[in-house]
Length: 228
Image 1 (cartoon, rainbow, N blue to C red):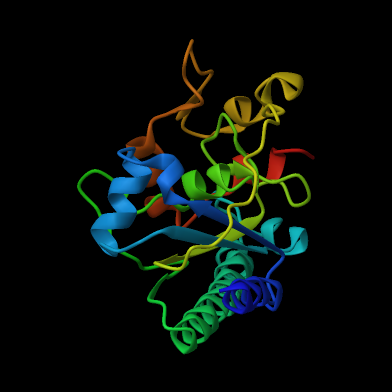
Image 2: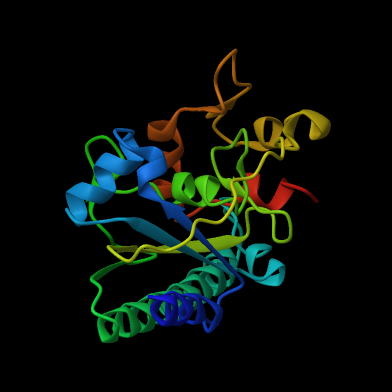
């Protein structure tokens, strides 16, 4: 049993991602996180979340503002995001391959293109909520995960598994949004972001945000201004 625990620990240490965390589902029993993970893998005991940086030089070229040559420059962000997605998905795949050698199941959840309900703009598993529970960061007023090192400039992927992995501690850090006085609210081109009210983590009209991003071919104004 000790050898197996060591082998599991080594699997997580051997990844090529920037951040990695683990949520042990028994601590979240009957919560939406637990229910969604168990729906995807009924025997699930833990969720591994992986994070990989998107470079600031790349994010700078993602804009919703129309300008000559803007579409071509914006493609730099899209192509780099695809590259990061591919890298982090590959790491998730390798984790599952190693879990299989130890007799455990693993379901890799892709960084992009996973199960998603377009009617309600809701994914089968919220990666950012898993990341918060695993201590990788906190949710900002723009609804994105803010990590201590990379801010919101990250891509996430998950692995749902029945392996009894040790959880990483959740973060008690407060979001830096109050100190920055809601820069994302001020810069949002369609005013989709509002200051959260009591008992709210964030307040965003995701339909307005999504419609604008789709029509404009992308937008990262709130990401660019966050923690700058």
